Image (spheres, rainbow, N blue to C red):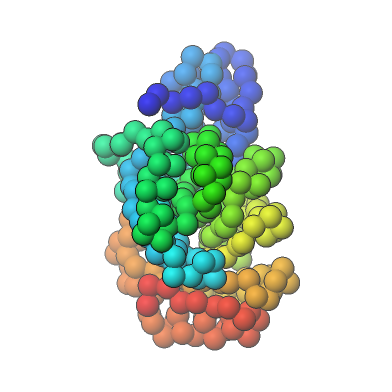
Length: 286
């Protein structure tokens, strides 16, 4: 399948375009891509160039997303594409989010995604999770798939960094049943490192919470964000003290491949801190 014309962009001078999907507002010249790598300027028109390009398909336990309080015990068809609008040096999926130039992609239509999801219902599948890389940079494919999945009576799940503008988010949310949103830490210093803004992520969590089931995840990085957990837990508790919060253990990956994994004792310590403020705290990768 070829790419299709993107949503949320405007023309600039000299055939350049400005993407309005996420807060980067990339100015993209002809034959160039935005920071995410998945939206390209072809002859003065912005295309969703990752549309239908799938790097991963699996039938996962819903808990693997992680979603522990959304149909526990069920499974979900998980699909991923390529690219990301963050550039985390500790990325756990960097081979498809950042270093994907030599990957082979399978082409899938939204109709095929729906058919795969329906076929898996016999194996306790409840729908489709858009995951592995950052799904929202493939906004058009997620939107088209979500409409068919919802029409088929199944559910849509997003596993996302939450870095999206409010207008496209609110347009998509009526088709979304659950989200796991990653929050890197409680400081702009942390988000400057990955190329984002903390307030945008908080706004996404707040907006999504009003529309669907939400769970939040923080990857605990040794000597970097472990001291942010209490502030994050307090902020989440102000939204809802029962909102599930996942603390995930870091393992060496990508540009942090020379670092040690987060010590288990650190994970247990931050778990106890988060439990002071939240009723549903879970440890991952332990």
